[in-house]
Length: 170
Image 1: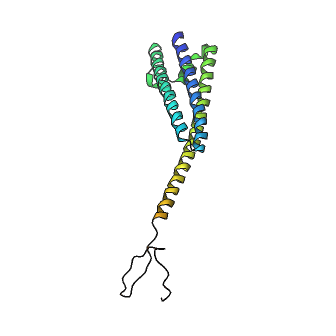
Image 2: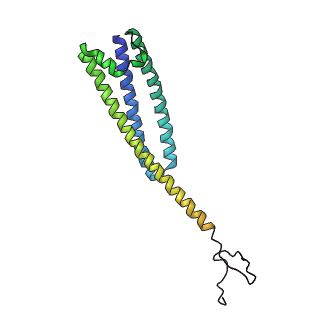
């Protein structure tokens, strides 16, 4: 069981390190989004994918360790959580504190990543809105509205605004 406990703490610490890397990349991405530097954004996204892949592998390993601990302790897997393990360590304050500390650090790091990602999402939405505005503006500049110019027989001549001169006889 001690070996499983060490594995659990180690994998949680490794996950925290990877999430810290992800937070740093997200901070860099924030400035890249502001600068509208698409090539740099592509590089950061690639690096984020690498870190996310490592996090996924660590998460799978953590789940395996938790399953193994549940089997050893004869507990139901679905009810066996990190908080359950912490509660079970009442008789081992050193291990309990170690696990609580890594849980707290991980929770803090995840909150930071979430906050930065929300800011980046807002920036990206604003950038998309600006691009849409610019596209709409360019489209409207290319197509001028049709005017209501009629000839003597009351037919619309279909002149485009600015396409002809002003008729002073009317």
